Length: 273
Image (cartoon, rainbow, N blue to C red; front, top):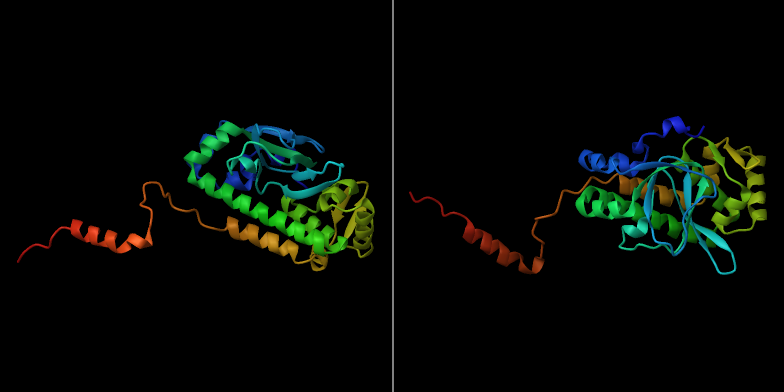
């Protein structure tokens, strides 16, 4: 089963917040505000100035791009693995896409001004944020490849596995319309693909609720895209924190000999015997 509200009161349910140094986390804690996430809620629209960063502890938020004719496609999903508001990490204050709640849950939001200030103070937070940006870029790139080259059945399996990783448990509450928008396909394609999985005994689908019966079986039917994304997430968040670099000299191979000679001159002369 998915997490209940009683199990998500701790901000450290979010992987970014849980990995912060104690000092950085304690400083952030005073400015974090717990907010509910409702299905269909728009955290920010395309072109809007970002007022908050959202660290999810449950649920899923999707980044959705909508064309002028009303067609939409999902770019990537965020759950308790990361945060919503990555343009702020890259020096921006606006977004080119919408952030829409796909699965209800909770998040801890932090004012954008506080977040950008913290990025300047904490190398730990900056490293974690940049790692998440890279992981998210991998998810976006792999989604493009998957949607272009793989069948709807494989795309649905990839989406189910990623959703399970973000939510935990074995249940996904999502309508076929929402899934179709995320995959950029017609609803009929999702209906047909879900029907095949249900006939094979891998899922049970009823009224917007998907129960995963056989995850291993779904993973066997998925394309390589899921493993590519998961491996990158695991690699990036398994990296050891870098040591603080402030105050360290910048390395320049072109002046290596010059710097070595200077250090030699500065060394005390050996005592005379």
